[in-house]
Structure formats: C-alpha cells, structure tokens
Image (cartoon, rainbow, N blue to C red; front, side):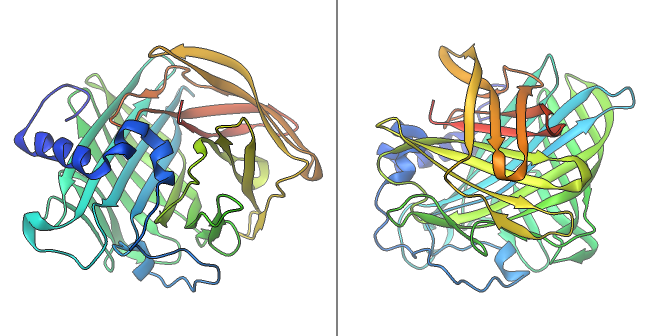
Length: 361
C-alpha cells in the first residue's frame, strides 16, 4: 500500500505478511530489532568483503537493507531530498522455500522532500515469486516497478554508475548516480558495533555519489543535481533489547570529507555514539564514543509526536562544532514502521548538507 491509499491484492498480502512476520517487532517498531535471533547467522569481526557478491542478498541473516538518500537542488538553488530504500527480512531461519512459501519478505520505501512538501510511499512483496529481490552480478535491486540497477561499465568497487527509479500517485524519482571513488567500510573494517553486548552489523557505504536527474512532485517535474549516499547493512540482531531507536546523520563536509554519525538510545536514558570520519581519498576512521556529542536543540510536533529536528553535533578532536536544521521539519515517514527521514543543512565550524534519520519516537 502506498501513501496514496491505493490497495492492491499484492499490497494487502504484503501487509498481512509483514504483520505475521514481525509480530511483537511490528508492534514495537524499531525497538523490536533487539529481539533474539536464534538460528540466523551471527555478525563477527574480520569478515572479508567480496564484491560484487556482497552487493546481493544475505538470506542467512535476519535483516538487510539497500538505502540511498540524495541531497538535490534545482537550477534556482532550491533544496530537495530523495530517498530509495529496499528492506529484506526473513520470517524464519533456514534454507529458502519455493514460491509463496519463501520466508523472505521485502519492503520498499521511497520519498521526495522540498521545503514545503514531503511525499512518501511504501510497498510490500513476498520473496520467491519475482516481485522483489536483489541480484549481483549484474547488480539490480527491485520491488514492483521501483528499481536500482547498475548501468553499462558498472564498477562493483564504486557501486556505480546506477540508475534509480521510484514512483507513486503523487511523486516520482529518476536519478543517475556516478562515483569516482571506491565504497567505504564503516565501523571497524565493515564490522559496525551497536552495543557492548555483541549486537553488530556488517556495514559499508558509498558516500561519494554525484546525482543528476528529475523528480516529480504533484505532477510538477523538476530537474535536479546534487550528491547522494548509499548505506548497505545486514545483521540478525542490530539492536540490544534495551535500545529503543537511533538518530543517524550522513554529512557532506567541505573539501569532500564525509561524516557518518549516530547515537543509539536506551530505555534508561543512556546512549551509545558511533560513527566514521571519511577523508576525500576514502580512508575511514572510527569516531571515539567518548568526548563527542549529538544534542537536540529544537523539536517539532509531528503526527502527535514530539521529535528533535534540529541538533548540535560536536567532535572536538576533529574541530567540528555544527548546528543542523531540516529542509522540512515535517519529513515524517508515516509507514508501517514510522520514522523521520529528510535532508538537512548545517553551519558552524563546517557548512554543508546531509540527511537525518530518527527512529523509535
């Protein structure tokens, strides 16, 4: 089912499958990602990443996603954002079953954002029947008519060039993504720790995309250019049971430096901070958990919830002290698992653009 409210048999079946799949997880939202995951593969340090194979699915793990966010602008300088996400989740461990008995459920989210408008859509599909999936090589990720695929001369180390398409009743996105540098392993060489109790994911990004193409909002086409960021993660238990959600930033800094930073919130009010600083040549260094901070500075009332949409980010050892503001404070994804996701700007010691995602509110 998309945000337009149109219901198809496939969307209904997908929604029912998602309910059956997630159970308590669905009710708890992102906090449910901390449930036990017996029978699924474990994330351990020291994994050798192999491309293009690791661009494809890892069905032995419970949860996985292919996630692109783009900071865009039109010829007049007006800011826009675009999101394209494909999620995979396994209903149970074990080898794949055939056809409709396949235990993999796929969920797609897409959105476009301007200063005054936020449009989003959601769709579900079952694995095993061709409605959704990921292939590599050649690289192709799809759910229904939404598609992200490698173009001619696709380079598995750069995950580029790519063509990205999504459409709904009130918006569409068609972008080309190019990159001249290799992807980046996040965390400790791709092992991204989420807690001190063993929760972790495998995580890599392509933060160096240049984007060009067209978005359409309410039948109004806009030609856009900008930068984009892909995140790839897979895990079987990415949160601990007492972690309620996260606040995640991807920031494009001056001089083509990049920063990925997030805090994981706990039920007792404590938080864990993780991130990586990425140099223009693609070297990635973990951010120390101590001495750095992400602090809310302003909130907005959205869908009956109070969310911190403006932030202060401080990394003293890197000389970074910035204030972030959203392009559109109302960038709420009212999907089955609701969350906030939208483009941001920042000023201070560094000025630039990026994306913010907040879950579990």
